[in-house]
Amino acid sequence: MALHRAALELVEDRGLADVTIDEIAARADVSARTFFNYFPSKDAAVLGSQPDDVERLAALVAGRPADETPLEVMRHVSRTLLAPTSADPQLRLMRRRVLLSEPLLAPALLGRNVRIEDTVTAALERRLGLTPGTDLRPRVIAATVLAATRACMEHHQQGATGTLEESVDEAFDILAAGLR
Amino acid sequence: MALHRAALELVEDRGLADVTIDEIAARADVSARTFFNYFPSKDAAVLGSQPDDVERLAALVAGRPADETPLEVMRHVSRTLLAPTSADPQLRLMRRRVLLSEPLLAPALLGRNVRIEDTVTAALERRLGLTPGTDLRPRVIAATVLAATRACMEHHQQGATGTLEESVDEAFDILAAGLR
DNA sequence: CTGCAACTTTGCACTCAGTGCATCAATAGC
DNA sequence: GCTATTGATGCACTGAGTGCAAAGTTGCAG
Figure 1 (cartoon, rainbow over the protein chains, first blue to last red):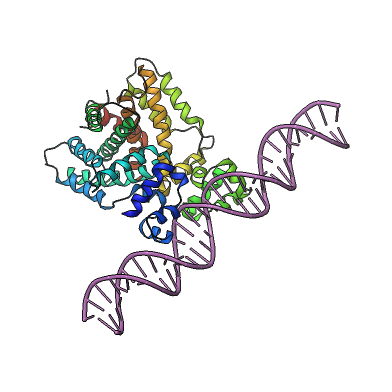
Figure 2 (cartoon, helix red, strand yellow; figure 1 turned 30 degrees about the vertical axis):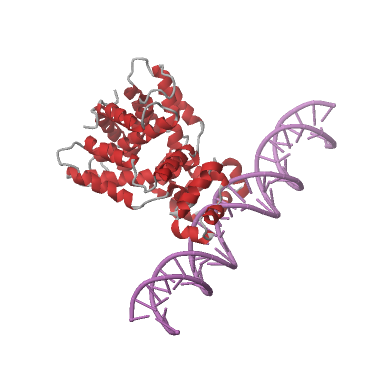
């Protein structure tokens, strides 16, 4: 979407606070009013929400082999999260760069994580044959793995060595070892 | 602070979206302009930030006995988080109720968590004698434990049985067992 | 008591976010 | 060529948030 790209480009070099919706709309050659037909807020435009990716995760959880442990399933969820299916790799990189370097975006980013967490929790519950809301485990697993994944991105943003994928693997090892 | 109380009361029975800053200010008997001398936003007023509580957590981490494992240290952090030192217990209860029942507040709440996570990560790094940003472990531990704590609150909000403290204990057991 | 200094509150004007509504343009289907 | 549906837009409005300067308040020294 042109608006998403425009938002990313502008925020990239001026910062979120110094970009107005009018400017984003202008760069995408639409009116400001039209902007709100596609995104409910400035944050959302920068985030560039693909509403269906949440369901994709649920399907992923449901589709993994029955003998995989929840943690193994979550490893795939984490992988999927870090390799989003965006057509343009150039755009993906800019997106990741902007999202992580813009502290004002953290709340929006985490708000999105809440929806993901709820979805994954429900999917895990179904997978384990539990009645929703009774067992603490699914939610704790979903929450902690997502948090660990985010922690890796954070860690990486601060100039860590190695690839993001290596960090995620290491994080899963730490989790599997009981955070010891 | 009168503004914080006013904000909580109004949001409690009308919802965040239907309360304006003018109303909050009016109920606290100050002008709307004065509101912004104390809180930068509506969210902040409802949240009622005590900026020093973040440093309290850092001190807690630094002060725990040297032979405690990081996970044991974090158990105390979690406890401290769930039992905040607010003078008025009545107010505390209303606060917890409002914060959890108001989805619009989630981003603000999580934004605050980011600051806590950064602080705790740094404190753990110091405790373990690591150069900041080199080792993944401190951040992963901080992030996952805080996420698990939040998951317990979430779980509890959805009508789980038992006390919150019991849930937290159970969550720590799950973490210590490697999320198995 | 008086006057001064520091701090707080307030009013005012402004920009920007976001919404509802009505209108207008384009395009597909007949 | 006509029309109906869909999307784009203009307009007017409410509310968030900021900067600035005036007004009020409080404490204190003379």
